[in-house]
Image 1 (cartoon, rainbow, N blue to C red):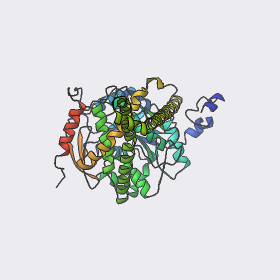
Image 2 (image 1 turned 30 degrees about the vertical axis):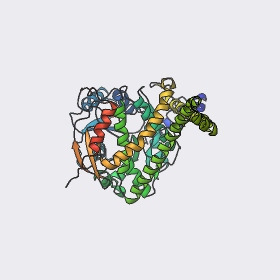
Image 3 (image 1 turned 45 degrees about the horizontal axis):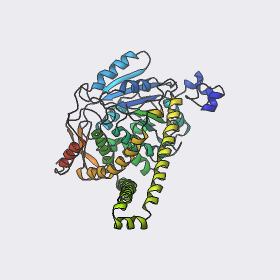
Image 4 (image 1 turned 120 degrees about the horizontal axis):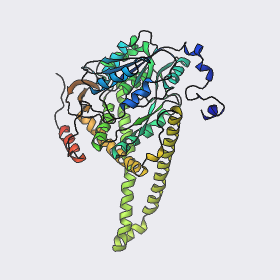
Length: 462
């Protein structure tokens, strides 16, 4: 991109070849429907929505903002935004109603698909908490047109921590995953925040994907990834599909914990026996690697404590001298620094790419990252992941944005609307108007309540 800009191609952030911007080429582009399921309204939503609706895609483009009801704070906010841009885009708000057989997000997505234009060739599902680049829709469409064998195109988020430990834990959770997406081609991973698919696949219920999502579907991306794997269909991630993901400035540790619970709960849902086996394998591997990562640091503390205690105890001194504990601690320190430098470099490259893809948008910087907190977040996240996975396995239920879902045989069997959550996990969006988060809720108190709920009997529909 830099070489092309240096050679005079000022719009390299939109396309590789300047001839693609010719009117004769643009008018042949296919129609795309962008479906965005909304839930709540927070500090970053307006900025994110503006980047999504101000796309520089040259073909026909419609936007469908889907909410569960008019009482959702997102309804009024996005309605005002559409009025502001009413002469510049084709957009509407769709009220989907409450889900009864699947997650609310999937329900909103499927209602959006039903309402999309009959001439739409592609449908693009977007989360409302990511910033889109001006050329994203065009880049994704170009790849779909170039290779009709593509089943799904996806991307991945670049988390922008807000400064709290919880936000850094989420950044650390996502960052290693980006390696699996940053292939510039085929990938086995799928992120529900950005998925472009053939609209006819939904109209024809190809492979029963609509049925699988509607009848007990909990996770849109895991369900579609399982279907793609089962039928050996292609999932790709173009190099430019990385999106800034600003996290809430007041993202508390308890909200991070609930988000982690939601992520591990995904492994309890499945659409086939093979999918169940894959999820169990992921469960085991992640469990082993997470605590396998933390254990050396525990042992390092033991070795350091032994060394400090040695001058005051002959037995401890003899044990310290006969071991190579400090050498192992030194080696662990080198490995830790190598890891942090690698994360720094990967983040640096992704930030540079995002800034180049959105030259007139807000420019992000590495200076806001606290690498001491990143290190702490790495330890905390890897320690808590197995605990969260075990909790999800035995509870078979999760509260997602004020809605509690119960699983049976890998599918949603019961839905309860608790209205106890005031904010979403990452964006800190108000779900039911301006209410304050209950005071005095420490992490220990939160985990105590979760533990008490763990021992409650599972609830299933009769």
